[in-house]
Length: 77
Image 1 (cartoon, one colour):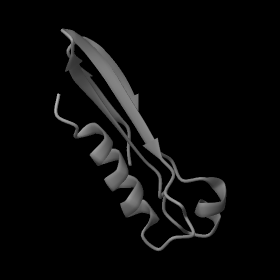
Image 2 (cartoon, rainbow, N blue to C red; image 1 turned 45 degrees about the horizontal axis):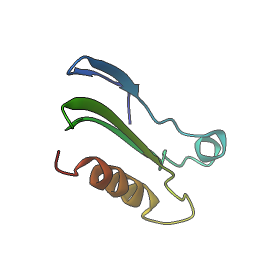
Image 3 (spheres, helix red, strand yellow; image 1 turned 180 degrees about the vertical axis):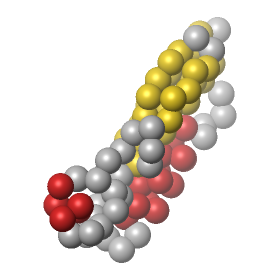
Image 4 (cartoon, rainbow, N blue to C red; image 1 turned 135 degrees about the vertical axis):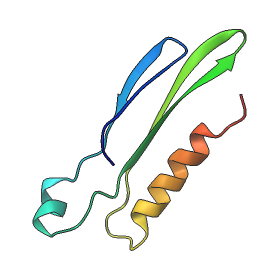
């Protein structure tokens, strides 16, 4: 995942994931994921940030990490 520069409701954030040294040496991609969302609660804006380790030993670790992050920030506000 590349760098995502975003602004929402006065919040500014940067989210990024990078391939670790052992994965890079083995020619494997980054399996980690992250997501950020601004949610409204009780009349206030809350910044929700989540990160998931892709469990590189799993063949679908990157997909699992991405789905976990998407699910965490898709809670209705």
